[in-house]
Length: 397
Image 1 (tube, rainbow, N blue to C red):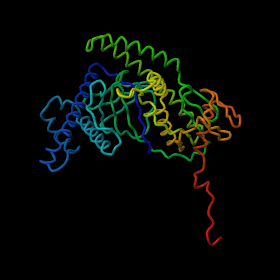
Image 2 (image 1 turned 90 degrees about the horizontal axis):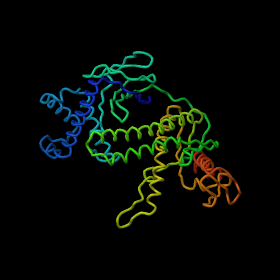
Image 3 (image 1 turned 90 degrees about the vertical axis):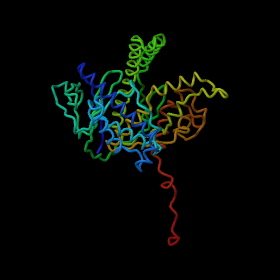
Image 4 (image 1 turned 180 degrees about the vertical axis):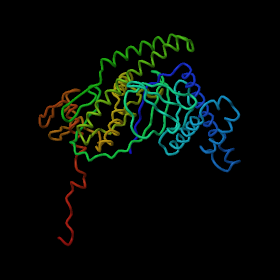
C-alpha cells in the first residue's frame, strides 16, 4: 500500500472563490481558538473535567459552537473537524520530539481546508476537464492533467500564489517487485546539481533561474517602496510570490524528471547523508562574536537551496520504495578528497572545483564524478562483519 497525491488547478466562479475564502477563514479561526484553549485553559480543564484537552472534547464543543454562531455553521463541519485533527497531530508530533510547538495559522499563509474522501464526488467532463463536488460549495471544475488511481482518502483545497488548487490523497494497492537493476552513486553539488558514478552530470537551468531571481529582486525593491496595506503593495506582493513560485516549479520539474530516470535505470542509489539545515545556517554570528565572510556564506546558502537537495532526496525515497529499490545514505566525509582509484585521501587531490588529480597514483577525473564513485563504493561496500574473517570453533581447532 502506497500513498500518492494528485494535485490540480481549480477553476472556481467568483461565488465559489468567496466560499473558499470563507471556509479557509473559519477553519483557521477554529484552529487558532482550539490552540488558545490548549495553551491557556488546560489546567482549568484538567481540574474541572479530570482529563486533558483532546480532540474528542474539542470536537464536542465545536458542535455547541455551531449551534450558537451562524458564521461557523455556514461552513462544513467536516472541514472544521479536520482542522482540530491537524492541531491534535501537531501537538502529538511536538510531544514526540518530531517538530516544534504548534503556532497559530495566519491569513495569506494558511489558506486551505480539507474534506474526508467519503464526502466528495469526482466526475469526468471531457478530455481536459473534470469537476469535484464539495459539501456546501457544489461542483467546481478543475484542469484534469493526469488520471487518478487508488482509493480516495481526503481532499484538500488550498490557495497559493498561482491560485486555488485541489489535492486528492489516495491509497494505491501496490507490491514492489524485486529490483535487480545495478547500483549508482550520486554526488549533489552547486556547479553540477547531480553527478553520477556513470559519468553523467546534469544541472537545473541556471540561466532561467537567474532571470527569475533578478525579476524577483526587482519586484522586492518595488515592494519596499510601496505603502504597506495599499492596493499597489498587494499587487506587487503577488508579483513577488508568483515569480518565486515559478522558480519552485522549475526546480520541482527538474527533480521529478531526474529522479524518475534514475529509478527506471537503477535499483540501488547511494547518496551522501547531508544535514542541509546545518549546511545552510547563517554565518552572521552574534553581536559579541560576529561571523566572517557572511555575504559569501549567504550566497553559498542560496546556491545550495536553489538546487533543491532535500526535495531530490524526498522524491528518490518514495519512488525507489514503489519500484522495489533501495536508497543508501553514506558518510559524506572525504568523498571529495579521496581517490576512487587507489583510496588515497589528500586535500591536494582536488585541484579545482571540477578537476581531480591524485597526488599518489596520478588518477585524473572530474571531481564530482570521482566523488560519486566514492559514494557508490561506500554504499555498496560489505559490512565490517561480512569482511571480518570467521573465527574457527574450538572443536574445529
